Amino acid sequence: MISINEYLDEILEDFREYAESGEELCKLKGVHFDFRKIPDYSDINVQQLYLLRYAYAYAFEYKCMYLKLRKMLPDTSHISVTSVGCGAMIDCWSLRRAFPDSQIKYIGVDKINWHYKKHFYSCADDVGFLECDLADYITGDVAELTDVYIFPKSISELSDEALERMCLVIGDLAVYGETVYFLVSLRADPYNLDDDMDKTRKMYHNMIRVGFTSHDDPETSPHMEPDDKIRNLDSDFNHPSDVVDYLTCILPGLCTRVDTCSDSGDCVERLRRFPTLSSSLIRYQIFKFMKEA
Ligand SMILES: C[S@@+](CC[C@H](N)C(=O)[O-])C[C@H]1O[C@@H](n2cnc3c(N)ncnc32)[C@H](O)[C@@H]1O
Image 1: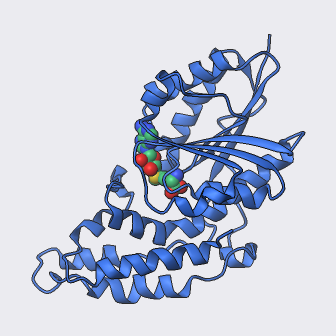
Image 2 (image 1 turned 30 degrees about the horizontal axis):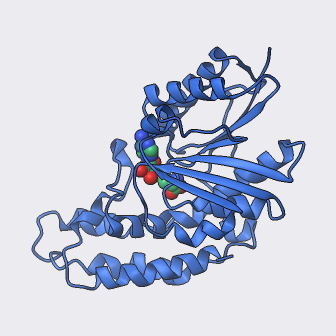
């Protein structure tokens, strides 16, 4: 199984080719989430920069979530997961790290067919990817019931209507006595956290409305991990030196417009952003829902 550092090294090689090709790098300025910004994930170079900045920390966060889930499961021999907004399927890597000996079925759903997914196909015993909008996925008779639904940094981008419909479909598919788990990774800054928790609150109440009970409270503070460098918390992670050096020291000076662009101060600041290497931004919620008669 590929390590996250090997994964990043491969992406860095491709990214360097683009960044050093003499092109303007303006489109990379859009890789951030400030002011409700959503990067253009359909662009391969945007994907590369996104993954170089965030895949390391997200892989760790999703592993923490799956490890916490593991402690809640009565039987870990099999697990089936639907990842909504799976992107490059980073969470499939984390799933395998948390469930090394389990039979894993993983279904990724995303409206964008990301590059850099295939590296993680071997992490599950059975992997499927559906390139479709959540709204189409759940109305298309292909949705199947899985033990777990994970929203890996995607909840903010999904409409209330699609999420409500998804709960309805899960309610129809589940028989009495069935249990499903929702794992939601949230954005940590207070402004976005409120937005994301508003979504999970609505989703929680939709699940109750369609016949599930839960002892979890959508109003409580989300889980955090101890605040430290990720490499100090988990030996699966080593400091990605090449990525950090490239993104912070080399990339900001590569844009061919940097000397003439009226916006160059802002560009350099945006291009110089550090990859996330600590656990300080980890926030997530886990809900257990039981379908009762
Ligand atoms: C912030 S990215 C997270 C990607 C990935 N899960 C990760 O951990 O890096 C949000 C993802 O949600 C997907 N997404 C947004 N709206 C969607 C929708 N309506 N249906 C399916 N996927 C959607 C986007 O295409 C994107 O890949």
